Image 1 (tube, rainbow, N blue to C red):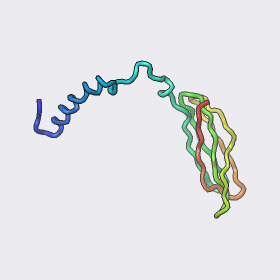
Image 2 (cartoon, rainbow, N blue to C red):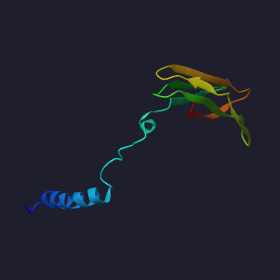
Image 3 (cartoon, rainbow, N blue to C red):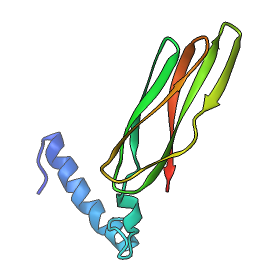
Image 4 (cartoon, rainbow, N blue to C red):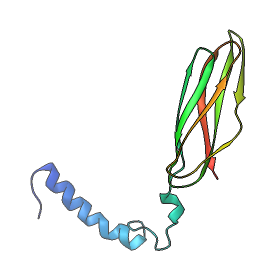
Length: 114
């Protein structure tokens, strides 16, 4: 049934397209969907102040490797550094920190699957 409102016309148009998408296989998830896609890695929040850089990480649903990237220096003389990789288990917390001699300009997290 067509209505004169824009909302009614859109609903009819969507109902007309849905069977076409389902027939083309675009409207449903595959039966053998990868369960790893639902799992998440650790999430980290980087911080820095003066000569210190650190990040607080919380484990996701998968084991993860995390490391802290940070930039030290003053003016045009700066350099990127990284800590070693640390393991974060699901549901656990870890803080990774580093120190610069002069000043920290920025910090960023690196996260990868275990």
